[in-house]
Length: 278
Image (cartoon, rainbow, N blue to C red; front, side):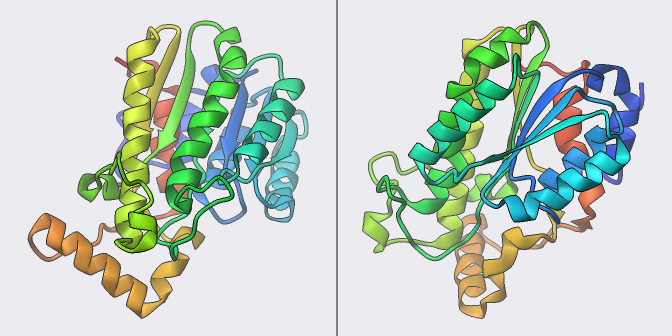
């Protein structure tokens, strides 16, 4: 079996496990053009899945992704589902739409995220990064559980995390950072990513890996729209000061990956039968 490397691409992973991709129904959140989720979907299209469900806030950003998939392989059924993961009402609506569109879900990839944004609370009263990156995916996954379990042995859930989790901690008694008074953009991002890791661990404890395996993965450092708030010098400095204080030294950025290299990590977790969830 192929030994994948830092530079391995999503296409290479799908080529290796094409027999696993064939006829699968796969749901991906945050599959907007120019992001890792879209590149994950592009790669999977070469493996001939049965149905790709792409969920996100903007149909305009996901429509070009669906068009490209249709060019690559017009036999694949593609479905867009609108969802704002920061709104529990929207998540419930999206879950209902997905459940109505599929008989089963073989692979769920919780990829969508926001990062280092200014302090806001959602309509549900939750800090926006925790609400979007964790709570929304937690709720969506649980609402799709019946269809995930209907897929039978080999079902997988992949939760995308980040090295920010290494400096993050969950303030269980104050997830809203004293209503923003003690808010730090990257601390909030790290909190959401730690929550995703713990959610993955909980899934592993509650389900046999043979029935449903769960993984949390860091795709690497990739330049996408996710880092848009880092373009503000004040936000960037605030975040770096926090990280350096946490790690006790100068922070060094990881070498950048391409989108194809970045999505390979997700796809190994979603497809490689040699790894298990327990």
